Length: 580
Ligand code: ATP
Image (cartoon, rainbow, N blue to C red; front, side):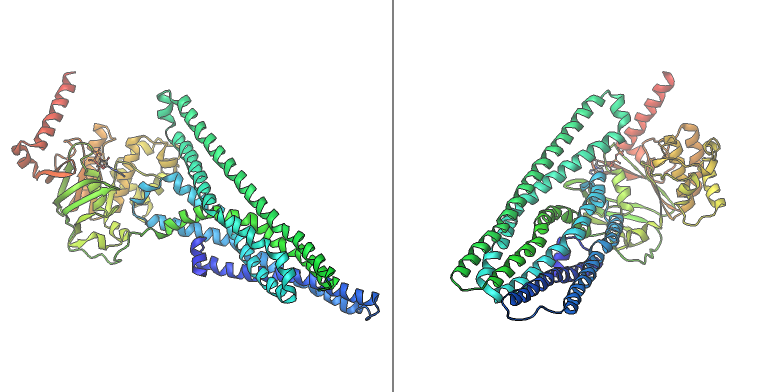
């Protein structure tokens, strides 16, 4: 049962231990409060004895000792309860966020197509926040209230089952009411969550694409759509909160009907002479306290139901299988062999039965029309995704059996979409090789022709370049990325449009650095400009996810196929530009 609770509320192992502790102290705290009622009952009973001359008042010492003991126990149990619930929950929040982040780091890239950035940010921040409240304010209190009330109810049934029934019947009915509406509550919570994600998606999209929106004069239209999303979110939130409030209050009223039935039953039993006044009085005192933990719990239960959506979203990240593999990667050489590879993004197959070999010491160029699958091949070669059919081997080892992080130590990668961090130029380049000296970083930067623009930056190599290098031009960012790859100096090099953002002069210079980097390595290069791949040893032409032709440039030129056609087109275009 505890394992089910752990899963249902996305608790870590430590969180589950803390919950058990929290429940234990909550039960003790609730029972201690009830013991106060018993002390009061005992004092009243003695006092009644004095009034009817049946015994003396208890001594002041005994009375004071009992009262002091009660306050001491109350303080101790409530303090421990607080520590086990509120005190430990911050650690639980931090551990959950770290575990989620670690998990996200190791999930296959395909997962990020299903859940976008704002969706995942909402889980890491919003969903964990909601669970934090449930972990600290709800679970221990609720389960503690169930157990302590069950214990007290058993005691009351033995004491007088008729009055026990009259005072407690409202509790299960109130809970049944809330549990009966659970499905609807969860559905409403899901709708509200989706609406909240649409709003944050919209805001993030607007911030990311502010240039495009403004340059196309779409600001007004975009804002209107965003306002619609915000209004929708507001509407479903208010609707959900109103219904929840209504249900909780209804349940609370039903539960409190127990007071009326206790009075009715008690009065009737006294009238029939079946109980004495003190029994009736004791029940009246008990019911003032017995509903208290549940009063709090009714509101908490609704929150608990709402939290199920957040818990499910967190669990989904925990349960998605991560790409794992052997930590020892000992290939025989670094030939990359694609064997009958097919691959789909979600349901759409974009590569069909692709086979080719990129040999060590050679430059293999992937070419083809836009969307033909070139970048996908490069990503699969680095196991950023796993193939659906066929296999990819490096040096005779199937890469799907190798841990992705270990595999990537053998790759230098320069992709079309360069990723930089808001750190100095030096630190961005140093990402290529952990612990590289200042000298090594400078050499790589010079080779990638970074010197020329870094000199113009206010603090040279120590200048912070902004989020994803926003303070640099496309070509400058690409040169930093190339410097990173040069520094890494791995046996396999993947270049996806690595020099696309460079002008002709810079491309020529960087090509020089690249040819030094590429010497003797397995190189897979993707470029649209035929000039960039002119020196390739082997060319693979892709069309609509299939290999149309492959061979040396000379062979393909003779074949008069797609490659020949692309070369001719680019020559014509260059000729046209010269004439223009
Ligand atoms: P380009 O030359 O324009 O960069 P490409 O030949 O490199 O194109 P890919 O980027 O490999 O082509 O894309 C192949 C197909 O896969 C395209 O139809 C594209 O729409 C689709 N695709 C690419 N990335 C994804 C993704 N993350 N999710 C879904 N589909 C994708």
